[in-house]
Image (cartoon, helix red, strand yellow):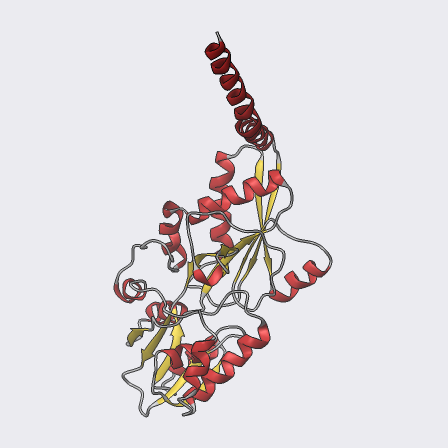
Length: 323
């Protein structure tokens, strides 16, 4: 009898402990699931273009994913709005935040939540925690005009892109470099005023559409042409569906559709031919943190330009600032 009482007491203790430690979590997960299931509302996504894409619109790509998502999640709508770095930062100051934000370098981001995804990417980590993940990327490429004379180079440069840093990390020995906005740089190049163009996937699309004769060498050692996405916590139910949308965006099925906008994936191969197929074969060895402050990005830009002006020791300074 004594042994029987001990066994019964042990089983009773186990049941109580199980209920306290596991039953509570089960009930919580069930309640969370039921609450999410009954949620009806709008998930807000902000899209910021800080570098040129390939073709079409990254905003429209996000909207296409949203339409697919809405069909699978009745009553949940996804609204995608265009922003600039400046308009987003002004909204943050007023306490206005989206559920998800898609952005590149040069945006002062704060208050985003840790992402629990199967995907990992060093450029979006703080310590060991993932706070941003790229849903698409571009790639730098050195383009040569065989018909142009001389050895001069035009660098296609946007406000927050670092093609000169790419040139330094790839140890390009280019002479007489000038820096122009992307479309102006392209016009300079096709007009025969520059032998070389440090450009991107957008320039390859332009050249292909024009039927222009060119030679292209993808540059793989550095990249900052990443379209990251991060999440804000605007309540359990909204966060649940925001992260569910993010998972769909990062899925192999969606990533393979990036060919529609002539962009590349950091996680899977996209079906391409020719130069585009070559441009996705490798991933960058070096990159800045997406959370790098603007003044530091500008410092990197200066070091890169110094390198192209002949100050080769600037490469060491650059590498110390990269991941």
